[in-house]
Image 1 (cartoon, rainbow, N blue to C red):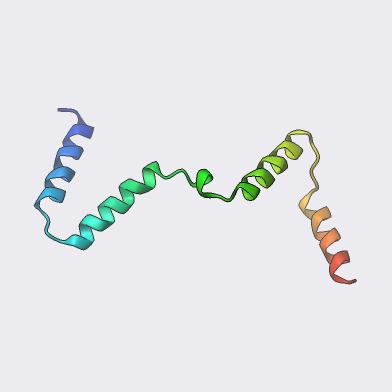
Image 2: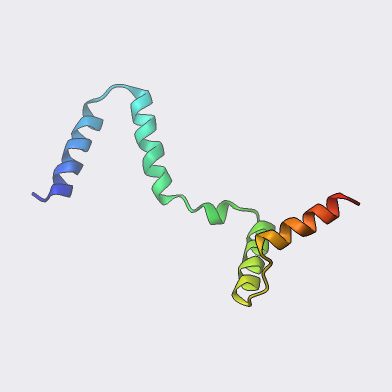
Length: 78
């Protein structure tokens, strides 16, 4: 039995032997996190905006943090 199989067997045994519903809910939540695709949960507009931003970065259409802060300070003074 490999190390991972040993861990799986021990965890499965603990899960099977518990009657604590809270523990079972926590185990399920952790396992559900593995398969969650948060990208698909984002609104279409947010995904589009992120993709647009990544494309701009790929095309070197970026602004440094210092320049962005300078622009924001100027905008706030209006």
